[in-house]
Image (tube, rainbow, N blue to C red; front, side, top):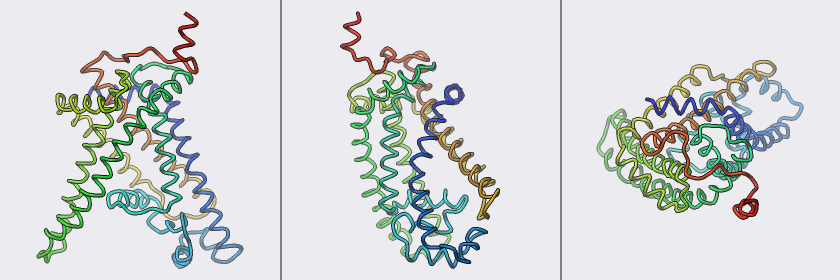
Length: 331
């Protein structure tokens, strides 16, 4: 699709954005990693178990560690190794599992940080030209509180999906559908079908909120309810293009997951293998972030191709930290 190609081009023309969001991700992950390191050092000490843990997976020690661990340490289990971490996170998200407060707090800070930079990222992709650090952060500041209001609506929608729809699908409907089922495969297929239904609802919500952000930035909208209504109207009038683009982006996401599944390292030892595993994991993080940015850039490109010319946004390029009053005084 032309919108997808245009989105990829826009992302690749602004590598500093990808590098910035990767640095943000790494920065917010470091405290958790250091907390885990401290817990390992305190539990292992100078022991034989430390040597075996450094040279591979010691399941007996891992179980002993988890039994006495609390907080983020309780997440240390075999499923977080290599590609298992991807499946573990996906399972926790779909099944709405409870995570330790430290992880929830870090994830919340991460989402707020993304909320702040979202306006600058979309503004850069909409203009399709360099805006500089001043322009980027000015746009981020302009749209942060608007997107914060939008996030409240988004939170209500996701709470409805997880607290009501998810519970009804898997705690009420699933037991009814499988009450008389005697074949395990049939029960699995029923659950898989319900996952697909729930996933489709999440994707629909994501699509609407993405285009609400796009319309807010491109058209300089102040009302987020108005942006939501405009997003629904755009998707309704361009359903095949919007859904097709989402499917193409999702296929790109699945391709990244599949490649990582093939190359993801297992449990290794210390030394060079550890650093190689770290490099592969960070390459996967970069690829995931690149796909997320392609989602936004391609959706922006599609909207502009239908309702505005490429590179257009309604307002002038912002200059940080000048205000409208300062600009009037200069004039």
